[in-house]
Structures are given as C-alpha cells and as structure tokens.
Image (tube, rainbow, N blue to C red; front, side, top):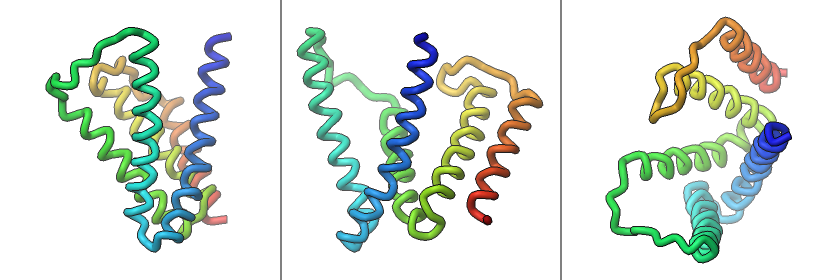
Length: 149
C-alpha cells in the first residue's frame, strides 16, 4: 500500500512540474524578463520552504546548526534547479508544455540511469540492463513523437 502512495506522490509531483512551467512562463511574459520570473519563483519557493522548516523544527524540537559547513552539493542542487526553471520558462513558448514535459522526463530518466549506474552521492548502484535501455529509448522516441507530430 505504501508503494502505491509513494508512486501517486511521484505522479502528483510530476503534475506540479507540468503546471509550474506555464505559470512561470506567464509570469515571465508579465515581467518581460524570464530570469526575473525564475528568481521570483525561487523566492516564493524559499519562503514556503522556510515556513515549513520553521514549523517542522518547532514541532520536532530539533536544533539546526546554521554554522555547519555545507558541502558543494547543497549549492549545486539550487543551481541546477535554477537552470531547470529558467530553461523551462524559455522553452514553453517555443516547444509547448507537452513536449517540454516529455523531454524533461526523458532527460530525468537518462540522468537517473547514469546516477544509478555510477552510484553518484551514495545512491545504490544498479546496472543498465537491456530492459532499461529499451525503456529509455521508447521514452525518448515518445518525446520526439510528441514534439514532431
């Protein structure tokens, strides 16, 4: 049962990404500056996450050490997110929401397979099987069909 709930949460998160991209694109049109729209999107997300962090810390009685040194990955995650959001804002008017989502999922799958294969940052190593390669090829072919037809 838990696996079904986690899977549904993953689908819901993917739906949020599909909805977020046109919202940010509309914001960029209104501002006349895509990078500013990405910055505002991240600011809104930072505010929401700050409130959630504050409430969680208070509820659990945890003390955070804000002075602890952060590894480079802490900054890399935000930087990659900024590139993703900004790219999405630029791409939505050029290729459409469905094609963008298809290519994003294809890119996530390919990168995920590489992360699994090398065990990046402690992820469990999983071999790239013929089944995985076939699935990735079909997903990429599907993305191309969505864009081209």
